[in-house]
Image (cartoon, rainbow, N blue to C red; front, top):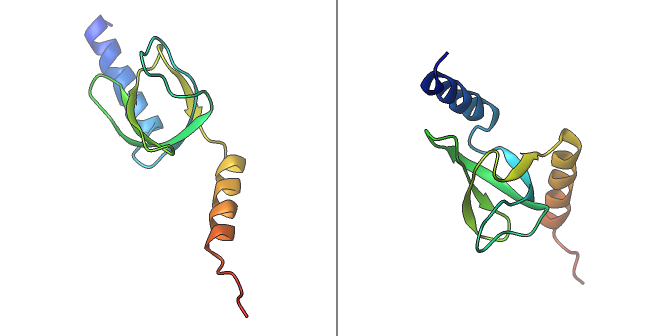
Length: 97
């Protein structure tokens, strides 16, 4: 397999592993002049044809993560359940008298 075919397969795997809407955790950033803090959560918007994972982070920043440069992973089922529980608790209206 040549370099082009290997890159094409890698990008296809990234697109399958990180579809739009996937929640991720940024573990650390590579060489970035304005890095995000470690352990920042975000949502995948799209994986482009170079394999860059473009995300909107919970702090409002939008940034492309480069596999091999930046260290990130999907949130686990437990972490997703915890997020959903926190959202449900936030949406319960307060009782007033």
